[in-house]
Length: 251
Length: 180
Image (cartoon, rainbow over all chains, first blue to last red):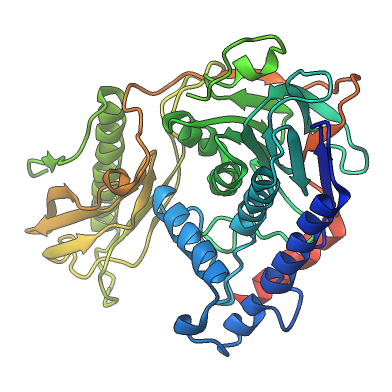
């Protein structure tokens, strides 16, 4: 996917082959879904070289998720671009991280996180047997990795949607000509990273209403940062900022 | 002015009800005012352009937050085209553009009789009943806000956005405007 991937396993035994397999999985995802690779499945699809019957199961899964997200977000999430091509990147990242976590889970790991470009699936506890501490990045300083908010997480996913250097694929589908710039970023905590990613992308496209959209949906909490440096959080978000809070269920 | 009335067929939240009423009243009155002002100005002119009138209203911010506490901000009503007869609008039914309600799209149908608005009907309803997620349908929330501050703690895992370089964004928007 052309983005940094970090895996940390806190379980006592971590076999390097398992980690290698996860990285290889991401390479396969990139081969299939990268819009920058001319012979990726998504590029071939966009050139009209593929019939829907011939889509891979992975492509069908992703397209289904894109469709679902579009319905649930009243059209604000829409993978169809102005030029008629589709770009499912807003779903592929979270979806692939969740699949990668399943690989580790199936091999018996319980305490780890997988981070692909800021979309993170978090399981269990860190090496100190504490909740994993995750920072929300300062959107005003692209050069440095500054944190403006910290949350403590376990067994959930977190994703941040904003403007990416590899393509401003986030825009208002209701008005193609208008780039969404009321918000700089919106961060979503959900039951898993796939949910977090698709709803972060959808909520970001809604601008200032995105955080309200998240508030209304059970199972999602959000933290948005606007261009004035003001953050708005959903009513259930704040519990994640407390390190020793016993009950961290997402509601 | 003829009697105006609205049919509202969908709602579950009272506060939002009121905003929608306000909004639709605004639609009607701006529509009506436009009709009135066109009325005044067409004496002596020949006006032969055709007639679908649509009103698009973009609702920027529907919900009061803990800092802002104002009625919905309505920006940029766009009324296309013009009157056919000096007496007002041509009789018929006109579809207004969908506008963003908080929860989806609402399309307004304006019915004109005898050159005047006789009815405004809400057509399109939010699709939330089709979603798989349970939606909490209480009153609009007031959400906590804060000014962000850079924290100096050491955090190894970071969820981030905004790696945009300005040059890249500029070239992208010029590409978009060429494509239009």
